Structure formats: structure tokens, C-alpha cells
Amino acid sequence: MDKSKILTSNAPVAREVKFSDGTTETVHFRQVSAGQMRRWRAAEASGNEDETCFAMQRLVAASLCDADGKLVLSEAESQNLTANGLTDLFPHVMAVAGIGEDAKKSSPSVDASISAAS
Image (cartoon, rainbow, N blue to C red):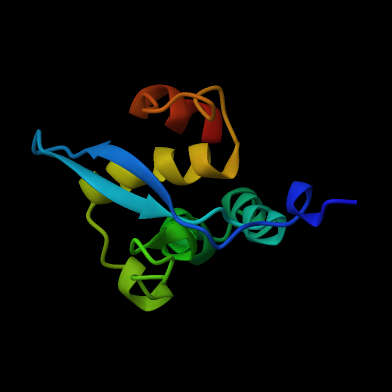
């Protein structure tokens, strides 16, 4: 069996991210694991405000990387993401994870990805 079919890859995926200020940049993401996705979904559903408030940020931190695949944002740093930054990056995290209707498109719609992720 080819394990690459069932295991996440640390290989960075380049995505063109259109930021809220109108600029576009190539940003790299790693695929998050099933455990990280389950942690995010459980936190979103927990009803615990502390967990819910930072669940998306933690998932971004687990995915956002440089061109070599090295994570660039610590979980603690992710708590300082702006609302616009989170809205701009999160749909790409989901798409690289293969989640949502935009997962197979090269540049997902922010609104559609957020809706699919919620």
C-alpha cells in the first residue's frame, strides 16, 4: 500500500492568497492531519469560549509554513492574528486539507470556504 494516500505530507503547497487590503501573495501551507481537524471541530462544538475563540487560529498555525515546509507561526503567535488575516488564510488551510467545496479549486472563495468550514 502506498502510505502517501493516507498520511499527511509536510510538503508545502503554494497558494495565491488575496488579502483584505487587495494585495495578492504566494503563501505556503502544509496539509493538517485528521487529528488536528478533529481538534478544531471539537473546539468549535465545545461551547467553551476559550476553546472556540482560538480554534481556527490554532489550525492556521498548524498549516502556515515557508517554501521549505517549516511552520512559521507558533500557536501562541496565532492568537494575535487579525480578523482579516484569519479570514484571508483559513479558507486556504481548509482547501489544502481537502475540506469543503473549494478544496479542488486553485483559488477558493473566502465566503464559500468559511461557510463550508462552519
